[in-house]
Length: 405
Image 1 (spheres, rainbow, N blue to C red):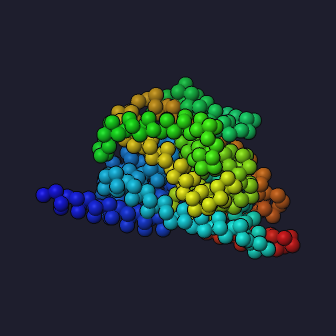
Image 2: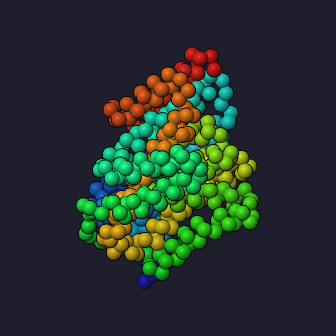
């Protein structure tokens, strides 16, 4: 009697893996676009859940720090195939872009001459357009009133003046506290409920592991500063503090790997530009960084530990919150806090647009013009990100060739 159930469970896990592998190969356009792809595939076509349940799930994952689209995908796999289904969804959606970026990391070091350096130059410039577009879109949604706009501006000042790896943390804390005081009006009280196959005990264990690693990894890195532990600590901390979408990971990772001297600003921005041209989650940028990190000599091993470390905190928090979400999401205090924190991350991303993105990429009028073209292609012509990356890469080659680089 139990064997058919087991076979059915395995079949569902394979179904989850197949569905998300296709999405991992074809889902261009960033986290918001991914949510649209998921809705088309799992609400409209496969009917794994209804519209209201999907909206609740998206609200949950946007509430938490971490990569929202990957968290939604993990939760969909969890709903369909249990814990193995969640793991299959994450692996299938993440693996294609991670492998492509590791390959790019290997090839980038071999790029030379006007063609190679021009492509790298164009990828740095396209990062300006991509980040500016993200700031513009997030500000319209998350800073739609004067109070939240003020929180965002305060976050810009904290990050620019602080100019350190903990200034982003301070800005998020400031935003949350300001939200508690200033953002309690016109709150939403959504109805409906989602039932996930996660017990309260499992949720409590996941929460304990999340905070245990967040507090324990820095101490472990001080006591046992091996390359692997230091890298895991840096990427876990960055993944634990990302509120508001994948692009927000840019300043957090820059503080961890560029300011520490592990990766040059040029290599960092080139990889970030390349990450816009591949499908799947933007957090797989960590695989590129792990592959070129100075402290880790083995590229594949470095990519693996960086990738797992940056995704782990968001998935742990998701598992921790799932059993309690239906009650917690109705609390006015939680909603106000997250309004302020989300406004702060707009400011953090705005500060990153200036330093390091703008200061490293825009060195003359031609770079400025190319970045402006990229921004207009994204905002006015609505071109997909991969197409804008291609245009800017070709533009970078033209600029480098014209300057005799």
